[in-house]
Amino acid sequence: DTEVTQTPKHLVMGMTNKKSLKCEQHMGHRAMYWYKQKAKKPPELMFVYSYEKLSINESVPSRFSPECPNSSLLNLHLHALQPEDSALYLCASSQVDMGFVYEKLFFGSGTQLSVL
Amino acid sequence: KQEVTQIPAALSVPEGENLVLNCSFTDSAIYNLQWFRQDPGKGLTSLLLIQSSQREQTSGRLNASLDKSSGRSTLYIAASQPGDSATYLCAVNNNNDMRFGAGTRLTVKP
Image 1 (tube, rainbow over the protein chains, first blue to last red):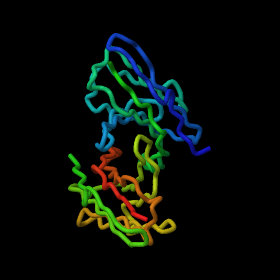
Image 2 (image 1 turned 180 degrees about the horizontal axis):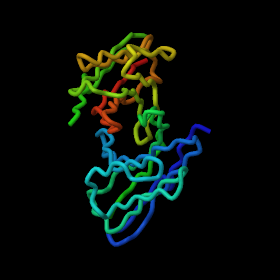
Image 3 (image 1 turned 90 degrees about the vertical axis):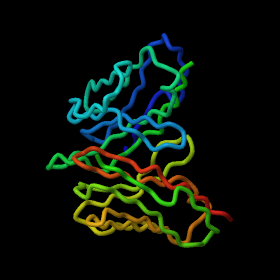
């Protein structure tokens, strides 16, 4: 299994809603990532978990709350989002080598989020 | 902070041509560099990963090279096909902080 699975594929939410994005991988990867991508722009790193601990937080607003309940799952909890948060949200995973270097990134197909 | 630049931003070629995409980065102290392909509205598909100790990697019609000292990588696509049309992005790993270039949008015309 070389897949990273993201659900849902599409999400429309109002600014007062609470929703969650989910990501799952069964490749034994110990680093998992959330990226945000606006149209025609490169992915922007949001969070990185390494061995289920948050290792990188790129100064993301608190209305985005990540969670890594186990080594296969990664969630992104959304609350009180703004219309400018509308984007493609991508999850990725990678192995971590003996030197704690993150290796090849595998991406999911993303969640297209629209905030009304 | 690492800056990654990809040139050209867009490229259109007739089917069958060989082509080169460029990626440059400002901080040469990298762990690895990865090339991706992205189709519109989709996730990223990994094409090639080059470790900092390597000079090139090959997969089928694709060949990626790395010159760490000059901060450059190239992706060579041989005998291009219409199915190669997509956006190609490079990502550079500095201390496990992965930074992407803005990508090159490739169109291969039949």
